[in-house]
Image (cartoon, rainbow, N blue to C red):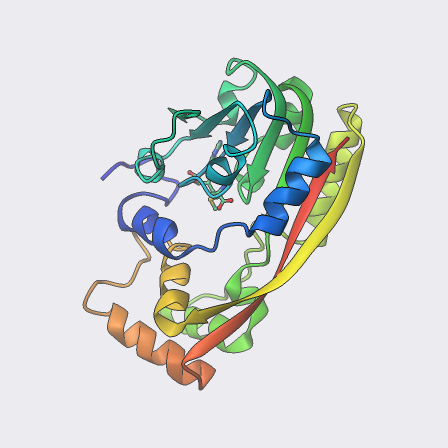
Length: 241
Ligand SMILES: C[S@@+](CC[C@H](N)C(=O)[O-])C[C@H]1O[C@@H](n2cnc3c(N)ncnc32)[C@H](O)[C@@H]1O
């Protein structure tokens, strides 16, 4: 197990790869259209995780450089002839080269976004928020997590309006013309999938022990009083033209 200290190592990476909803085709098609991507283009996916954006985008462009500081996340990236999985972070930009577009999915809150927008050698950016964290959606999920962890669950992970406005302002200050747009849909999770998605948002230190996970799952089912959870997802994108 690696230890970047970021919390995406070991089993958390496994849960991320297996249970975190990626981006459905309408989001990828809109991204390709808005960024004007063509089969000759080079794209940087920064904070690529296990490839939620890199993999579908690789179908539309010549080459994707998929960068993440967590080797356990990269280890889940499927081998594709036109995806280069690289260990690194936003601190490595602009040394990673020149790109037609830089995409950042649900990861900008870990980065120095002002420096990134100023220094990246790219024609365009897309900053993507994959919905809102589950604990901000449903009081029963929020209360269950607060009980397990003994503290309120409030983190918005860069998905809230204040953060989005800050990102748009910083893009403008760096000379880009940002526009925000949204693709909304629903995703039905079984309770097992929902628990897995929640585990993927924890860190190896806060993940319930393997013996406690069935209890967590049962408590989640009881709290929601249902065997499934339909998540309303609005993927919100700030892209530049
Ligand atoms: C929530 S995941 C997002 C993964 C994927 N892009 C998605 O849309 O689902 C956040 C990722 O950002 C990575 N990350 C954290 N700090 C970073 C940094 N400074 N530069 C680049 N990536 C970073 C983490 O290792 C993690 O894989």
